[in-house]
Length: 69
Image (cartoon, rainbow, N blue to C red):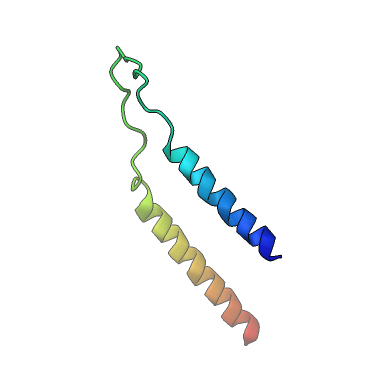
């Protein structure tokens, strides 16, 4: 069991070493077009989502209280 752990540790160390030793002097491709517009905003429907979650929570708590009474 000890030999497997040592082998795994050496393998992980060498993998990281090889990944850091990659050559990064290749020329980057030139883009002639302008980048496209940004995607959808993250906070577009957050208020609607909050209201739906609150409504669902109220519904579930009402249903649970109705069942226990």
